Length: 76
Image (cartoon, rainbow, N blue to C red; front, side):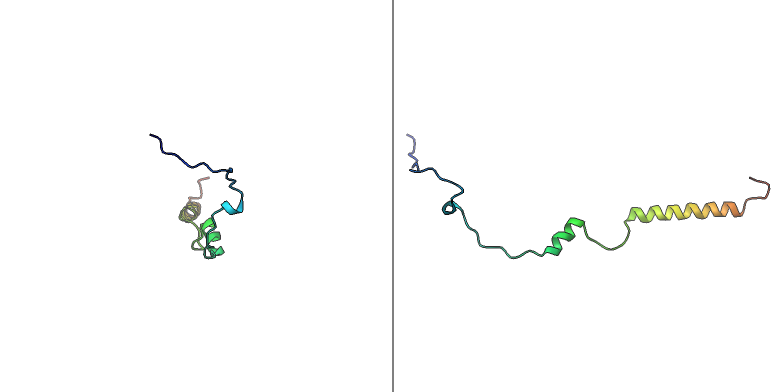
């Protein structure tokens, strides 16, 4: 036997302020934290990949300078 369900006499309008659930206001959020999380804030230093690339470039330049300096006079 089906259970009878009460039917509202008038349709419920979800935009009616009487039908809205009101919640107490939450604590105010720190606006600086949100900005920092979006920018992935961290230490002010280059990334590890950038440091490795810079070291690689400087090593290559140093090796090139050493080979130019110690090259015999007859070699082009």
